[in-house]
Image (cartoon, rainbow over all chains, first blue to last red; front, side):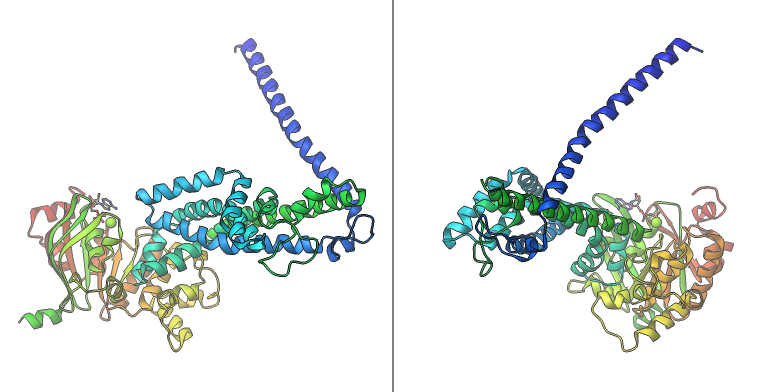
Length: 283
Length: 257
Ligand SMILES: Nc1ncnc2c1ncn2[C@@H]1O[C@H](COP(=O)(O)OP(=O)(O)O)[C@@H](O)[C@H]1O
Ligand SMILES: [Mg+2]
């Protein structure tokens, strides 16, 4: 009918679509470049020794980051041990009993915490744990990371518990199951895969954190003698080696970056798989 | 006389009121369920049928803001007396809901055992119990090869029978059914009705239904509710053939509702 109007619409449509594609490319290209650069630079420095050996003075061959790899696992493990139970129980509270002023306050605090810069949580734990203990430790590092995980875990748990159909809760209650058992074994159980997804995503996030560890777990050139000792981590090691004047240490930093990226990627992918299983299970 | 009545009547509601917040949904119901018989509860939507049966196993109070007042005698004992544990009442008075609600994270077998497992109760021979309950609910032949599949994998009608089996596993004395067939097709409905016939004589059953035909087919007694009140209650035959209250007659003949 109105041919001119139609042409104009087509043109506008084309222009907007082109702009969207261009914007996407601008956003994606740097990501691909960074990943590619890390793979090339890091891959070159990767060797069995990297996974098996301890750091050595600059210039010596066969140095590795075994202690930092174990250290990162330890820190993340401790963060989960502190953060997941606390976050899940806080989420249960919010979902089941949180329709009051206390729930509102907790929700608000949790949202504020989610926005706190990660270095602040490091400082907080430094003042609260490191200073009284008199030394840096994996415990302190784990606590700092747990603080970062807490808001995510809490809110994910709350949201997912609220998604569990009330009919299931009533089914259990009508079988004479006490409320707390219903919450734990029916409601929480049903929401568990989703909560696990949230936890994995939170873990992926804190695995890459450096700032909160600088004052808490610090670093260690060798194995830590326990979780109450300064502990090496991949991120802090990258931070230190990246600024090193020695080329072999810089190369190690690239290798560590590659390992870190792969770990975080694997975590993200497993979170996606968990989500898919949840959807499949719900059918 | 009193004692005889307590024997004849498994459940006796006396001046039972229920509220949702400030809205008064049940306005003084006095009505008895005859032991080991089927009582149908009919009436237009929103007249308080669900609310009434949910008061009989203290499920009404799990809705936030909901509250009940009055007396419900179960074997002569008031379940609303202070010191009575609602949890124990619910184990004696089972409930089947309108929409089938098997636990999606559990297998068929675990769904049947859910009441025991979730309560931390043990049974000597769980496999025998599972088979017995599934046979009783006329589901055994259809699922005996797939007991380890998810309960959510069954059809709607099968899910509802699974929910009945789950209720039976706790060996309740009373079974409350809230429109158990309204989400099911005619064949599944026929199966559930048959099942109610089988259970009659062993359990005291109250069934809410929207279908007059269903009430006529399955029940010994029928109660007609209207606007939160019990309008008429009697044996099913006489309610359907010669109702004494004009409102009952209007409802039965389809003049409203
Ligand atoms: N969860 C609820 N919150 C508030 N009011 C409710 C709720 N459930 C039912 N009611 C009200 O209580 C009355 C009785 O409802 P119900 O017992 O479900 O009726 P029926 O089962 O006969 O259709 C209705 O007026 C309904 O609006
Ligand atoms: Mg109803």
